[in-house]
Image (cartoon, helix red, strand yellow):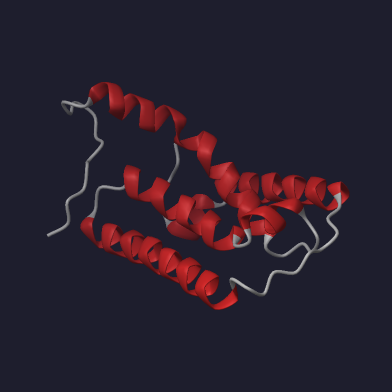
Length: 136
């Protein structure tokens, strides 16, 4: 059985519950930016994090795991987190000596942030149509 800390109204962790529900929307744009960073070449996100998509998906899955209350969704998000961590460790083990220095551009970083925020806003607007879950 999974040990999951549940956040729901009226729980004994009401301060933690309020903190999570009121601040979860501040973390998700970071996830969108990191996912976009994997597709735009020569940016600082990719240079320093090396696996921005896997890290972004891990952040996305963790935030959704904290706010969902159904066990079938828990299994999906736990599997997503475990797979991403496994892939990061595997890729780092394979490529630890194959480091390439690339010239990064701040212009590409601005493009990553702008496209990530645009993508995040569009995902918020289309969340109900994509997942069937209303955010209001």
